[in-house]
Image (cartoon, each protein chain N blue to C red):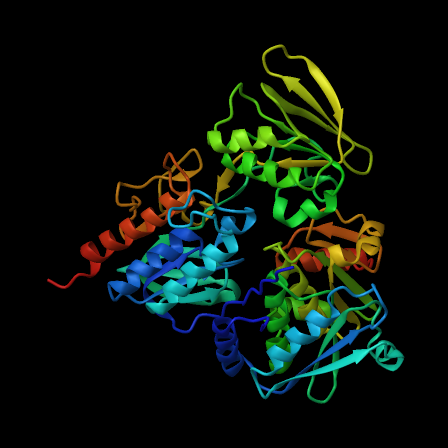
Length: 218
Length: 319
């Protein structure tokens, strides 16, 4: 049975027509290692269905591929990256199954990379451009959390605005050890450079302030 | 394992509408369905997620037509589909300001954009209320939560205290008891305000108990929540209980800020007449943001329908 209903598929097809400009690619790194990737098959199937809805969306599926792991700096599996047609990587990552509310994040990522439009205010973009050192933003989520997509997407918008920034959505229940090491007890839980954390889908200006605080620029 | 897939909203397509509906919960979507069927152009602007607060609940059991219950996510997506089918637009944006003009309103959105409307429906709902205790904010995400469906997974096999006495508190306590090793629901009165069926169901949970006539007096912990001190409101006796989690369901604070200069506000809720119109003509308030007695999905959709019909007859119907 198809993952997406025919009705959803039709709606996504129309959204792709309206919102996609240039081609985009979803890079998926899974693993065949037994017991270590509960949803790898499901993700592969889902991505196949999504890419079938537009000529502009393609999917690369890799399993246990060291080269891909290093190229994109995937820190765990299952991992997803959204890159443009030329293979340019914007630091947009998602770890886990992009289901529930996080499916909308994946679609928004596709629109964003395809148009290179983050929708951030010019003031925020200017501030982000000043960041000259590596920043890792981990956003822990659960698929049933309606506030979470905004928080993941914000990290992805920031990543698009500055190549020094990597924004990672992390499905907390699939990575319990990482989540508990980061004391995640409510989502969205955001961790900047593995040190500074905050909770909640903050608006753009406050979110930016927390990120800057996390890297000692505020 | 069943998976669901939520699809995002698009941005606004026009700069003028007959009616702008602010908020995409049941009230706003119901209004949109009726407005579209009367032939009025309308857009529902939602800043977070279509359905609003009902996304935070595990299941809705008292909305007629769904004898098996329905999830908030599913109900809202059905309402959204229905509104779109009749021509309503659903847009993803946040409203910053509403300004009265000669014969309508300017509704300002993020990034200095605005749309014009001949009438505005405020359907902004409400946000979970806080206890207002020291350390509550500090420990939010460190043991304290307001969203069971979001965070229950982090409390598997752990002890949870929940607070509140209405339907939401009871429903969410039942949901949380399936994760927790032990669940205690604390309520300040001697009886729950919520439905009897929910009270009975909670009683059947072997790992759940209730403490009545008590309030959370103090939140304690070093770096995270470690315990709470309960105060019995009759005897004033204080009892400290160790806990891993504290889930707070003590009602909602309405989101009325957008209209505080345009409408009368009573106890934080927007005052309207019986057709949901505020003291500013053409400005309506519907759903949980409106001052009324029963705040449920059923009454929210009723508000939407009543306001849409009245607005159409009074301001748009050709004579």
